Image 1 (cartoon, chains in turn red, cyan):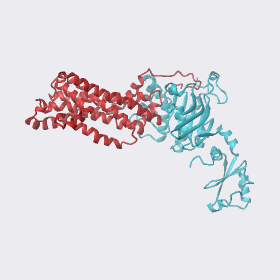
Image 2 (cartoon, rainbow over the protein chains, first blue to last red; image 1 turned 90 degrees about the vertical axis):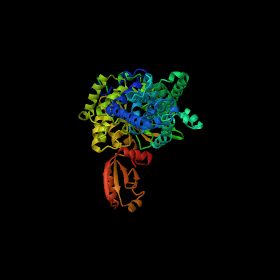
Image 3 (cartoon, rainbow over the protein chains, first blue to last red; image 1 turned 135 degrees about the horizontal axis):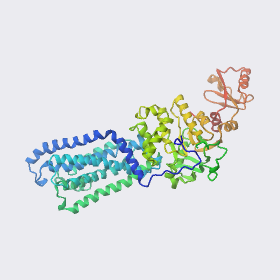
Image 4 (tube, chains in turn green, yellow; image 1 turned 120 degrees about the vertical axis):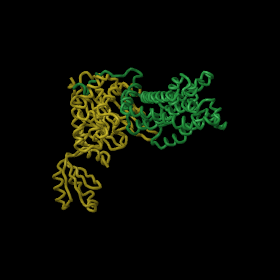
Length: 278
Length: 324
């Protein structure tokens, strides 16, 4: 029965995980929970892109392709749309994962507080959850990319690199949104976030039509959104046009990485503040 | 091996270097202008059961969160197992078991998985954590529910699971914040029994409660907290001896009669308390006091003679009841 508890004589060795391992404990926890819903989420991640590419790429695309498609650069609408949707769906999934689950861990199930009572730090809690979101995005983006290839909508083998590009795009949203979620006490503002930030970005960041068709002011505005850069990357990789302007691609990566890094630093702070407050 | 536990008055031989497991001096917690804990001093010795008794809002939870190294102290000093929470937080937390006031179980996992994943946070191997989980399920009388989801469990079962979870790292100190609040009497007694067994094994228990019966059952020594301060300290028995009489006669009168009785009992009782619904006469012989009341020609609706409790101590110290 020695397991139940140690005597109070204080000779217990400090059981301390190796540095950095806290992050993976949190990741492991999320993975354990995820096992239950894994099958259904994989199925969903197949169905969503398939439906979108059918309806918009082939259905709507057959009309688009009969008109003037010179602004698309002489490719079919399906080929134009598919990589844009890949980046946009990474944004959508990441945004959802960084709102309700974070709020639940801090306020509803309060499991982050349970973690914080152990040697796990606020940094571990934050990074472990972001790592889990990145893993989820990798799965979603991989399935999406397979569907794109199956539709014959990829022009270049570089599409493989569109998977990490989509994950990077998603994380550029997940990290700052997680930082925001930790400051909220109710999900009321999440609705506003989806309605007034995520949906407009989804529509106007070059996913469905080239940003060049927008008025100049909106073009400039679009340039400052992470999704614009995400779409530009995935599309460049899928079409194989990325090598034509590597500097632009580098700017895209740096822009997105900045969002990830700043967002992560802020998230460690806001999640930490909430854990300390109790 | 675990039974080196001794009564709190005697310290175990190998702990002479660290006489207190927890030592607080002038410990203070402020939230902006609000002072939740105001310069409190206390010591917890190895193997003892130490309690913070007080009403809601007295500063008990804030104190516990500082001991748990999740809330930084605002002022004063706090040493836990001879370490500083500000710099050694993770090392201290590795040796604490924490039972928070609100359940923090993962309702998406099974009962056993909750234990396993928690053990992993302490860096235990899967094999070790599995072995401990099974033993703790036995201890918490939850073996039959091992594979069940957490949500349908009763409140008492969830609390027992939380206690089992807090023991997964074989803690030196177990912190329990209001461990039985919201449970029915049967579930409370079952929980007390488990905690008593832990105490027998020499685990140092630190708990908060606003139930005086819980404090009397579980605590070797306690401090009474009120409005962010410690107002008294001692064993339940010594506190009662110091601040109350042996017995109490509780009298109920019709409200308009009760109002006319102020000062009438001074000759009968050492002290009287007029509460909204009853009058308390403090006397070493409660029965005699009750007889004397009748001899005065008064006819209370009901009379109850009982032993003094910590509730009376609290009333004496603060002029208020513990639970309002």
